[in-house]
Image (cartoon, rainbow over all chains, first blue to last red):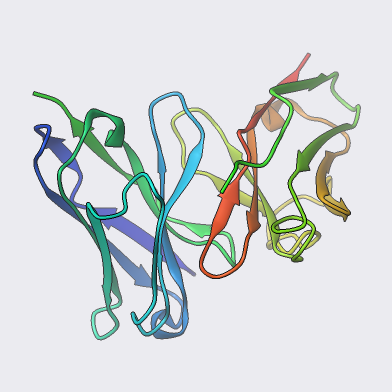
Length: 114
Length: 110
């Protein structure tokens, strides 16, 4: 059974930083492109970032480019999202997902507030 | 990348069929057979209902079906049931490592 378990969310002040993690199991993690998708309160889904199976290629939405960094550790089957210079509009539930196969985690909530 | 276009809401009575459209461009929906559909109940994570335009993950009822014509994909729910009331999002591969979502459609069971 595919499992994606996010962690690391919480309350952070504007301008602060946070690192999200996503622990994967049930599939060959090192062969899969993995994504971060977020959902602001009451809003739709937004594709935020992606990383290739070997970590060599990354993608960022314009809204987070230069502030967020995606990475992965294939030896630990774990995906990361380092978020910096956080803004109120970054407040959302962040999901890790294998979009090609429709697998999603349960999400972790990031709250940006002073 | 612009979001895919979905109707804000659709509704139907139990037992009826409803269809949700998802319109993109030749750079996303029309260019690849990687359209997926997600069901989301309030407070819950999205659940995959359709992937690769027409495929159903195991455990998804066959009342749910997907199709595509040109730049528009569709999700049809046949034999509508009360538990189908939820938000539905389409998603399409758009080249490189880019994926784009629709704005979501609220399905109401009357």
